[in-house]
Amino acid sequence: MSVHLLRCYLSLFIIQEMCWGTLGTVRPFSNFHPDRDVVEIQAALDKKDALTLVRILTNRSNAQRQVIAKTFGETTQKDLAAGVKKALAGDLEVLLLDLLMPSLQYEAHRLQQAMASLLASLNGKKADAGPWINILTSRDSDHLNNVLMGLELESGQMVEEAVEKRFAGDLRLGLKVLVECIQSPDVYLARRLTTLKTSIVQGIMVSHSEEDLLCIRVAYLKLTGTSLYTALQKEFKGDHLQALLAICRSED
Image (cartoon, rainbow, N blue to C red; front, side):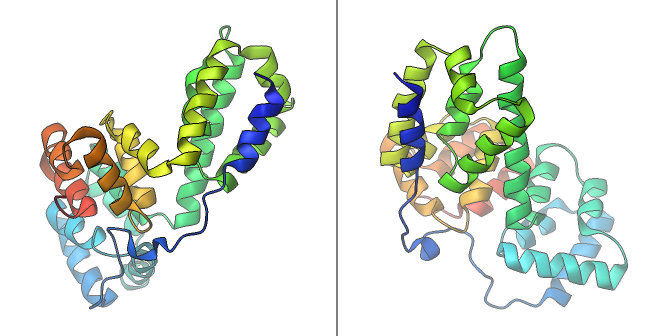
């Protein structure tokens, strides 16, 4: 398999424009009053009331969460994210902090993580195809271009050179997975969700909650015979589970 073919596949990795606006599970809250939310959130932070924080933050769109964070800062002279860090811990803390990030900042955060994984694979004694396969098959075209440009700047070599130098048979596997992702991104993401790894589940659900999580839920059900809502209940627990279920929304 030539590296030129990889570049061709990457150039085709463009998710066609579709009307995904109504296919997310998290939508703008119709009776939105940020001042009321801030009062509830402030009390919840003081009491370390995770359920209230989950109820509010998983029922507001990203844009509404930014208004809440701004209003919270103006009202209390404190940073909402810092308050969440102080009140919570573990996976739930990470999930709610992810939800509080502006969409572009969250994608930049994921971009940084992706670049770190790819650089680590290049610097190791033995090539690790895992990060390449995972990243090249789970990002949209704009994100992929940014990752690859950043990688070239950081590593000092062209991506084509790095791939030619470091990989052989695993690249073929990566291309197969890439093709699947290009043809059916929702199916690929559903397949990723079957791992039920915390970082993967949270990354997909937060990123796709306002776009096409309903499609991913349908694909997950077809793929596994079990709804994502049920699968989450079997793997996670406590307030963290309730936050994930709130984003997932319902059974299929």
